[in-house]
Image 1 (cartoon, rainbow, N blue to C red):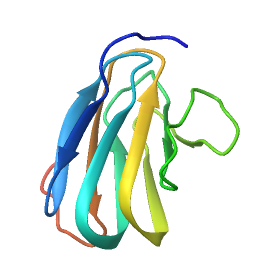
Image 2: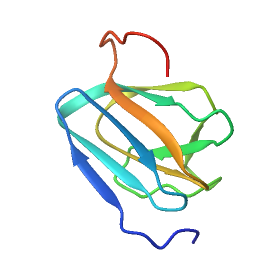
Image 3: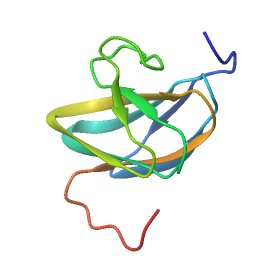
Image 4: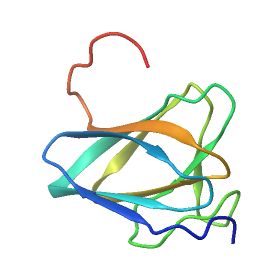
Length: 104
């Protein structure tokens, strides 16, 4: 276990941008299940995600990575995504297909 802080939980309709505290998972919830896109705005830190209602772990089993500067599309409809990183990392979770302007 890396962090020790309290997990942040957000409920949004379309998109959420926030910064992970290293070792502490965030949860982003949507009103319905959607295909989701996860953008990792960090240039150095991997973000790990799960969408099965379980907290991810850094480099853990069933935790899927989002590369630094990368994007991961979750094709299976999900109503909730949970994210973690080993150090602070800014992210955006959005409903797939929503237009975004500019970069990270």
